[in-house]
Length: 409
Image (tube, rainbow, N blue to C red; front, top):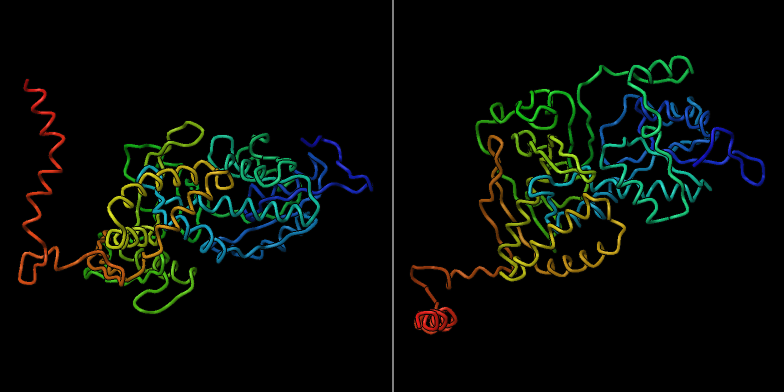
């Protein structure tokens, strides 16, 4: 850990620290604080994973606030293709509810911070996570998994200040900040969804108020006619909407907008945090809700029963791995290899119906469909060998028949 004195390298220059920078109050004052408290030159790195843009040029503001250097890394496409799509192919949903929108972005941000540290010759990385959250674990573990020699400083863990204290610190030290209207909530947003906590949401008995939702329409106010959407998949990856091929980022945004206006993707969940705390949070994941539902339906048509059943356990493990910040651990690659093998024939089109907050799969087709109408129909064209049923049932029930006779004795 750096000391209160200036940290200098062998050439006499101040050592550098890469700061995970958002342009918000915490990371803006952290630029000045890291320089004063730890004697380090700050490299402010903002990673764009699809969050709403700032009202100003945050990179220019970081430099005005004393950062030695500042940069914006556009990682949206990488986030979609290398992080969201693997999670989608695994139908990764934490505790059966949360599509891991915040969690799955953290390893990518950690990777970009480590890359920046290497490029700038920095020995330290700083982030704005608190001591009670999951993200501190995801960042810290992710960083040391890629480079165990990097040292981590978390100002919010050692610098206990209220919002008012931070604003006063900024005023006294000439730190330029944009003080927005104070919100009772803490939000995190990216391409795959948004999380919201704090304020009245901490009362698990109270219904989340209307202002807790910003990406989805109130289902009561959603259109009075259902909206249909056809999603095309190739090897488990969405590639088109209503027949129009799209890149990953464009497709996710299209699904987000259309599902959101129909009130789809609202989640109210009391989850188990990694640090042992139960936390009530709301999530808005319209694109994730629709795409995961469609993907599962296509798997139901193209995968055999034993693969589907075995894969469900793997999916739960992968979701836990992402949530627990172990993306760069030894289990992730073997899991992804298995999941990718299951997706070889998960290609086709799924039609979903979105209406008043609900998303239902109403149609699916695939060139690799295992659904055989001739086998399943009770009408003309039935090709099933009915005579085989008696023998099958005899063999299937033989163990229980044998056990019943033995126990009767």
